[in-house]
Length: 371
Image (cartoon, rainbow, N blue to C red; front, side, top):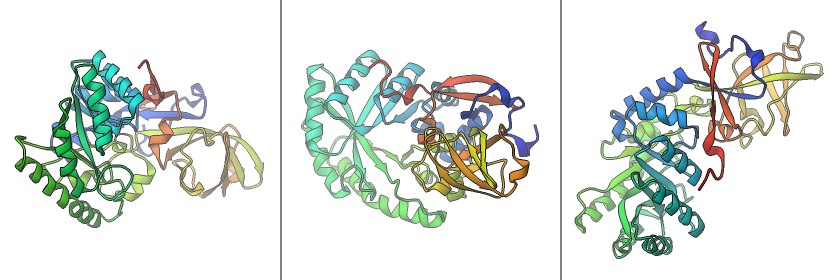
């Protein structure tokens, strides 16, 4: 197929719209690019919240990646079913979720599970629940690197570590450092901010090792924006996620990251309500809508347009070439934010060389699978 039109289906009439298209060859290339940036598949703990699909996990396993990060019990269960060896539930558990997590651990005893804590009350809760099951909870301390969403300040880490050491049913494994607030377009500035913020993390790592019998303190760092920053530090593991599918928002922001679009939305013109306006079936329920109206979707086969409004089932676009566009025409677009967009779809349509070859369930979009 013409490289310029790589995203177009040879027979789009076989697919209803709106639809989530996944280009498996681009996913495979993004996996290899991710490994190349990290230098070794063993340094990677990719987040699966972007795609939530077992088939993509299998592709990563085949490429040598065996450790994964997730945000929900459903995502952890999907990973367990798929064959992951190490799973970090990168979320602090409440009492009810911790009981579900224990059920998952008991069902898959061969898998190494871990979760996050950032306070002693949660640590004690885990210690008590796991103790009742004669289990040990492996934990990472969640570090607030400046995002101020979860985690504790670096100067408080050592104190929490000492308290964890006194809890017999907890096993400390390392530090989790998510710096999602660092999103500078300029790589050198992003690198400077990321490395500066890490100085205190490295200091507390040394403090922990100097005051314990631990030979190493594992550090899991960053997401996609700081992936290329933390990849330079061989002492940390990296956990990018969005780069597996990529989106238009990061493509515009992270110029040094050579990932390919692997997810595209197929939509159709369903009305031409007034001269200069077209309406597609790409509503709030079909593409992530948290960004401003101008940053929801980037159309690959439409130029000279401006998105005017969106509702649950409709997206209204002002176009220059109105007369040459017709009701029923297919448009292809890349979301600005792919992660919440994927979560809107039950299944993805898999495309190879312009042909539909399979459909993959977005299994972990569910709040609950079985546990």
